[in-house]
Length: 323
Ligand code: ACO
Image (cartoon, rainbow, N blue to C red; front, top):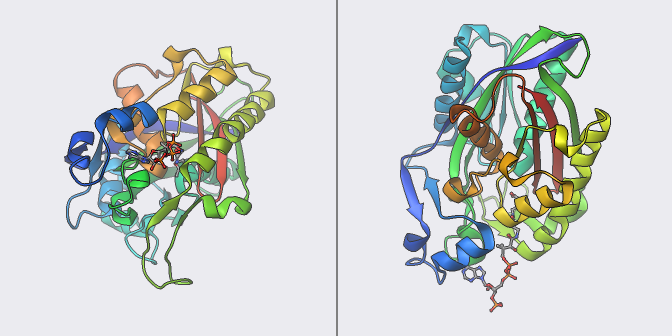
């Protein structure tokens, strides 16, 4: 009964903050429109030359510090990103080398905004199998690099940042009281590709491309898919929404978060929201929100935490973790 227990978490946000008012000087938008439709007030933007791996290294180091561990203790690095430094090698290997990790394996997971849920699920399966002992699971993104800064329908929504957790294989008794990842549920359906995609890549234009989204279409599917995969997680452990201490959703949009929380019956005070300050940081949003809620004293050891996401593909997923 091995469990993947969270030993620590950490995050990093680039210094530069871009407010809605500043954005409204670049495109035809307003603070009022953005706040009302999305809840976003500001986002962080990476500096010139500041890469996804650099953000990831800082978040990973913060997570190691919080765990009281060093690079030597890590034998698995899984990085979730859709904005890698290079087409290859994997950003995880760049981070691995920058941290001085020489043991084990490092690779990227690409599930867009669901990347962190897919990455923690993957790492959990490695640890539970006994093949690896301690994993760094990182979500790191520089979406500012793939935005069309003239498209007001998308450029106001996203931001840059990184977050990470250290997972450690520990013995459990197989009960609900165990610390660690208790259940994970992943889904995808490529039929939704055209609703949210990047119009570039080696197999198409040969350029990096820009993010394209049919916002209203994404919105239409989001709440139903999110609530389905959360119900799967609750059912797997025979829990109800009341048993969950903290709901930490992917931070895409305040209206999607509030509608799903309401539909599932999570009390508003149990919902962790950072989208107002960070915007949508894709795969980084959940570990950024987890780190926020741990550092301000909300999430404590023993709490039941539910994470959830929906992203391009579509991909969607959920996990219940006892902290
Ligand atoms: N400022 C002002 N007006 C705008 C802006 C803007 N930034 N963007 C669009 N508009 C206009 C449109 O042009 C349109 O004008 P029109 O009526 O004259 O044609 C009007 O606002 C309404 O546009 P809609 O797209 O229908 O607006 P909607 O209410 O759907 O809100 C939004 C748009 C915020 C994008 C919403 O659809 C949404 O949140 N969708 C989900 C998107 C999302 O969360 N994606 C990420 C999830 S997956 C992932 O994380 C990768």
